Image (cartoon, rainbow, N blue to C red):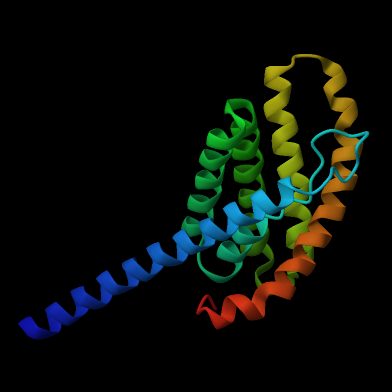
Length: 181
């Protein structure tokens, strides 16, 4: 009986360690994607701040194939990375956008279960990431004109959601080879 209890505890510890390692690996992937994306020229030079959100691929992967807690952990760690590399305001935007995005995608996954595609989830995630950032920035800049930016953010969110969904599908085989699926 003691041996069975020991084996159960060892199995639980192994699963926790694997989860921690996977979360760390996905966070590292998110950091690399963030650095790579920041080296690209702006997508729309006339519209500041519009990006594809490549690092969100790691968060989406965690949400779709691991679990919600790991996805939220990566989103929070990403905001910490942004704080260290781009400052407090950017970090706040990353955190608010990431948490709202994840929450919306998680709710949609619960409501629609297997009947919703990764493409649709990615689009909703990207759009609500932008909405979360706009809400956060509206507390920093109290001008009502900031909301005139919403149509641009909605459109760019749709495009970013499509792009990140396609890229996630493209890199899934590589993630499978390193044991992430």
